[in-house]
Image (cartoon, helix red, strand yellow):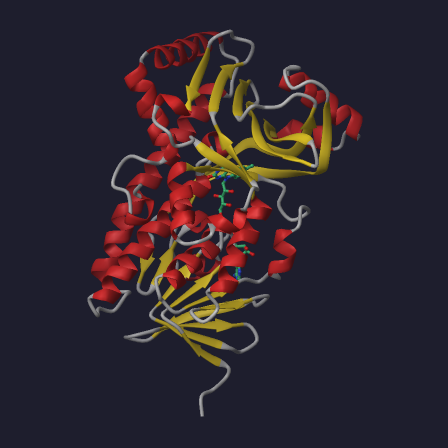
Length: 409
Ligand SMILES: Cc1cc2nc3c(=O)[nH]c(=O)nc-3n(C[C@H](O)[C@H](O)[C@H](O)COP(=O)(O)OP(=O)(O)OC[C@H]3O[C@@H](n4cnc5c(N)ncnc54)[C@H](O)[C@@H]3O)c2cc1C
């Protein structure tokens, strides 16, 4: 008689965040028997109190979500990014990107994380036969035999799989238990996140304003009950953020109003405020035996360019491709060649983006005269040289480079 305390799947994923749950949908949609474990109750993860962030999903991420059937569940919850305007403090120069400069695909779509999560959970329900969601459940540890991995849950249950993927985020326990070292540092900055209502429409324009404490981003969201809305990511000095967060609503809104600069008309606060400490971290390896790292468990970057989740989506598309290819050939899906391909494919791209965001943050988060002059000149040059501008836009859209099949147009 089968032991009900032992489940047998092909891939066991730990972490039902945006990366782990998307990977689960991608694998199950390709017929790969998958288990997904999270320590939290999925119902708690889709409320507006759990995560107030909205993500700029790049065009390539959108292609992935469409291909695996998640996108239709977002319904009309996404706001297309038609233009991006970058400005440096009060300097008149700004960099202006319009989606029409590169084709007919929007630069990306802004979607609230709670709705992205709800969309992946809705897709999971459709994939039920191939996908087993085990949550809330705590993971104790992982062990390996020559031909399988075993995930041990704290309540004594076991999940046998060919491969275990940790998508546990920055504090990945399985990564640390496996002795995989992480390089990185914290930034002396905190991201304050809030949703605002405003009198005038945003017209699908995302604004990023570089202020001395860090970038201040105003990102378009869909209207709700006739209210125009935007998501704010206000990067502030870590030693000052606490005081801003402690302000009453009227004073907090007045600080926001000053930074927005009046172009959206009268503002209001919608929902709670959130804060996120910022840091950069990078795992030394992405694969050890039958354990594979994806998403923030492998790489955590500064949100200055809105790319952290997009890198995670690229991990998902690449890992799905190597697993599906190995399976079609009748090979062990965790064979070293397949997993080596995943690691080489993703590590270079992730490392490059981590470096770019780190340099951008250092270059723009200060008020040093000569540095400001040079960076403003740089923005002006990019803005005036169309091929250069298009190149930057395609990188931000994630539509260049060696794209996994699920992200090709
Ligand atoms: C302010 C801010 C704005 C951002 N904006 C953008 C943006 O616009 N675009 C973009 O691309 N990226 C953005 N990012 C980055 C993006 O949010 C992250 O890269 C992404 O959410 C990481 O997802 P993840 O699934 O890898 O990890 P997480 O979201 O950390 O999820 C990890 C999951 O694992 C579970 N878990 C952890 N440990 C265990 C365990 N031992 N057992 C069981 N379950 C476990 C947790 O409960 C959680 O559900 C932003 C980040 C910040 C801070």
